[in-house]
Amino acid sequence: MDTWWRARPSGPPFGDWVTELVSAAFAGGADLGTPRFLLARTHDHWATGVACAAAELDASMSVDDRGRDLFAFVGWISAADGDPVVLPGLADWVAHRTNWAGATYTTWCRPDWEMHYADAAIVQPSVPEDPPWSTGIHPGSAGSAPLITDPARVALHPEADAARLWTAGVASTEPFVLVTGWPRADALDVDRLTHATVRGLSEPAVIVRRGTPSVIVSRPAPAPEPGDDIHPDPSVAVDPGRRRGFRELWTDVVMPPATQAELRALRDDVDRCLKENAELRARVDELTARLSDRQRGTEGGDAAHG
Image: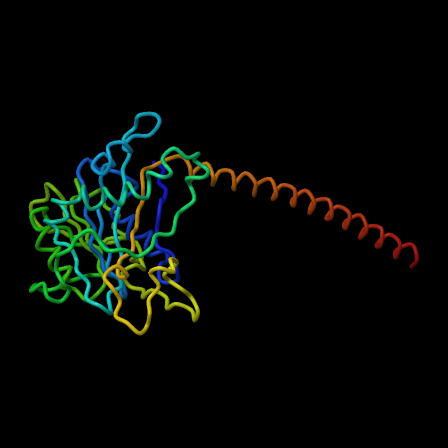
């Protein structure tokens, strides 16, 4: 299944870990008959979002030109330090996902819905905005013990434990990646998750990671270079002399439905590189043959002279 980004935050703080977080929940759009919800913390940021069928977000943009169902991830990222962050509770996410994520999905996808795939493949930089929830839980005030994270294992829990784990996640100060709502354990990307809930699981279990744990839970985001502006929209640039508004804490992350656009663009790039490589290889072969001829001629001349 092909996936492509419609919008993502830009600037030095947002590196590969954003892709890793979204992929941990979206998983290429697989097994999204029911939605999955993400709550995660890195050393410097909070992230939360929903992966679901596009039909839950905007029915008019829910199938491709062949009538196939589309799937999407919509979420938000906020700095973990500075002004207080408010995170939505899981029950509120479940109840309001269509309104919260639907409006953002429509905002970013509608303008490009009829575009040619080559134009729509360009990823747009999202800008800080107010999150759709007005109330929620302040990290550190959740009144719950934090999640316990084992870098070598993924903790699996029955779906009935989802709300408890979510609250524990909000209370956590160490990095973790929690995704709720998995239909089966073998669908998980264990290299990106630390905690997951699985429908049909009757008791907690663990999965040993296949390899080195992903850096998204163990590497701080790189510090901005002097002069870098992580707020691409001047209208929301932070004035160091005032308190940051809630609007400036959150940035959209949108992974829209699967298409052929990115794949085709990559194929074009590969074809071009292969052509250039073949031309260079032919030139190298030609020069190598000339060098061999000259070397043989030089050796023969020396022998005759001796």
